[in-house]
Image (cartoon, rainbow, N blue to C red; front, side, top):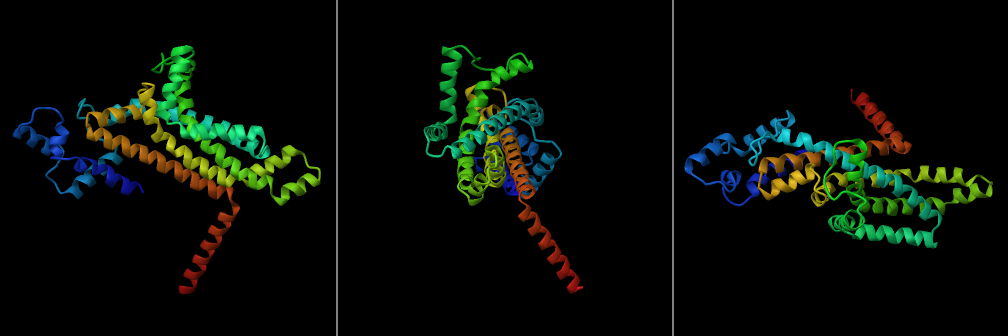
Length: 314
């Protein structure tokens, strides 16, 4: 997946209309000498496969190119902003899981009640609201009108001040993910609540807390799978949130680079976001194998069958 994505990201330079060298120059005056120097600097006269291999090799070694707008190494520009995006995504993920999973469990246990309908209605509303619209609304209400939170920025660097500045962006980013987790958890838990073993456990007089733990354990596989895949979208979802709240992370850097056609920055940030998403999905796949003993037994049987077949052929 990453190989295919790297090819698509590399092709951004050639998908733009016109001469790639002219696209890299941007709004600067053009002369034949300048075009020639740009082609030599970026090796645009080389075969495209050679350019791709050179770019990928540099990326793997931390050389992400040079920004057209600032003239600084792209890795240096990203280094100071990646931490902000990571903090925002991690906090939003923790908030989403900490609220979404218990809310889904409660809704499943109160299926058909007013509380269940209220949780469902809230989840649908949060899923339907675009992140930038929700961000602007929260800025107006909680920052401008009530004055409870700052309008923009990250504060003076202290931990509490940072969390204060990140509260609205985190809640805005977490809203859609939180709603998805609630819906998935509720559906998975309803199957367990209505299962035969739940009725049998209650007839035996087991404590409700013990039954709920068993239900959550049995529903963990679809919850973890769906939650992990939804959380992977948090990284890419930071773009609109960072722009709305004027936070200097990778999302705002990507938006600025697209505006100024800073192709090396766009390529680097896009591929880094893709790496983060693919890594998250790989971790989710690993957790699925850990949580589901049937998959582990299936893998062991397949391994034994391959070993037996190899021995027979030998």
